[in-house]
Figure 1 (tube, rainbow, N blue to C red):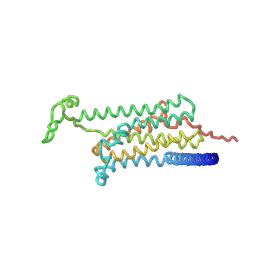
Figure 2 (cartoon, rainbow, N blue to C red):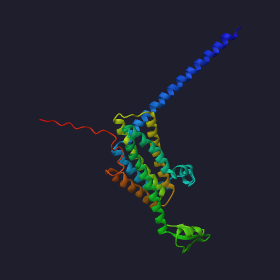
Figure 3 (tube, rainbow, N blue to C red):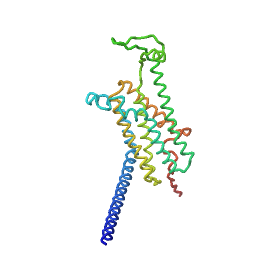
Figure 4 (cartoon, one colour):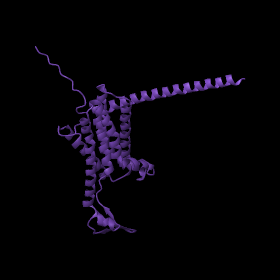
Length: 292
């Protein structure tokens, strides 16, 4: 006879708990949305500043030139000093793949939402195809330099024994080591990706200023690119501190900067190019003419 009120009270408590949890979820979603919008606005304003982008170039140069001096002040046994560390294997070795995936999604959304034209979207995405060609071409050029400047050595307990084998293939086939001038491909790639991502992400400030559609998915993709850019900066610093010889790192970064200049700094401003980031996306202001 007394089970009815007890069951009703239990149901009422369960309903109140569900309502409380529902309200908590709504509050958390509102906070997450507010943080997403605030963070994307501030990051867009920061990356969209021409002055800060010029300073960013100086920052990358300082990292590569002066960063190796930090090797005397850091722990040489840290995880980042190992070639087999998680970040080196999963991110640095696949830096171009990560960059294409994240940046490709951002460029696709920004261009298509701004123009609704597939041809314009494909043209802007072709900059990533050019970037992939630059990466592959640079990698082959670095191997060629190492082949032309190298010699074959046999490791012995007493040291290295020089052999007269003519090329890398025959040297490695004999179980020896080929040593030549090795331009740091990691420093090249991270520098190139940093400059490329900073240039592409800078468009978002103008995109927001024109009042174009900027929902949560687009803002989230933009912030993921900003986080990836920050990761590339950190891994570039780790690379110049722990790995490669000094000139190899400086030459790699210089080639990466030169590749950015040839593409984003020069060619993409020509009419027969994939176009610079933001080109053709935003309406130009009409100038008013006064007639007497």
